[in-house]
Amino acid sequence: MQLGERLAALDAADPRERAREGIRQVVRFATAHLDLFRPMVDPGESDDRRTAWRVERHAKPPHDARVGAASVPSAVAPEARRLAGLDPSDPDAVEAHADFVARRLVPDEAETAPG
Image (cartoon, rainbow, N blue to C red; front, side, top):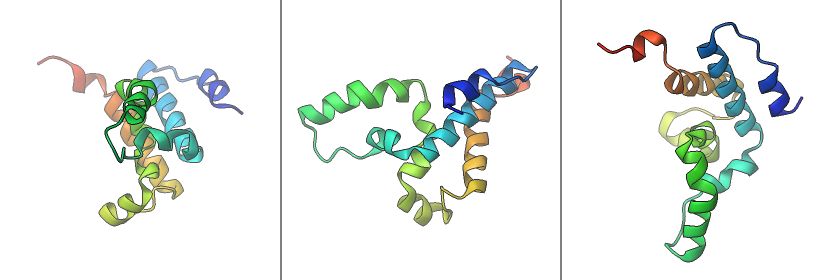
């Protein structure tokens, strides 16, 4: 099943949980298809026109939409292994990261209430 089909099939009564599950699906997709996301997080070796174009055209839009959070641990796996001592491709790590991103982007109502 394609990502779009999985997102369309979500059937959670709670709109916040539906949004979280959609985010989890994107994190799982990003981990499984890292080749699509790696250019967004690869460091620019120089500040040239190509880097500026890549950032403006490909990195900034998803970053602005916070989609970049889905792929960062897997895209920088060697650094994640050294920093956190975990393998970002481990299924348990993917699920933990997916839930973390989902809960940060869609907090519980009590966490967003003024007061």
